[in-house]
Length: 154
Image 1 (cartoon, rainbow, N blue to C red):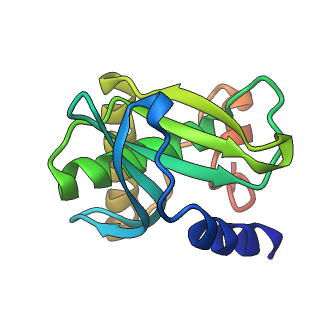
Image 2: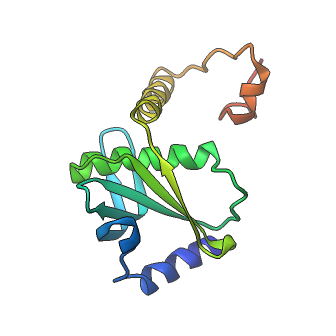
């Protein structure tokens, strides 16, 4: 709930603020975007002076010198939605850690990483449409990040 209230407050307070040091020329707040595979609400879509765009996401969290893979994956999903809806390339995203004095962290989004996210989304759709569980991995450390770890039969 605190995170939701924070988002609502940021939407009202920062309406006209542009992060010019980053090269932002325009921004769109609370953008609900869809494509044929997914949908999501991006806190801010930033239009950059180099012709690219970038998602900016507020996190009700502390920054501890590490960007979690789940945050990077979320930014890659937002990048996919932005590219499909705004027809601009996205090669970076930004995270604002509100519990660390609104620390801004730039996250590079390499094309290979974005393509991997798209492949995983395709695999998820296949799993759902064909109603099967994927095979378990031999490497148990991978189970830590697996969506199925609580219901896996292996």
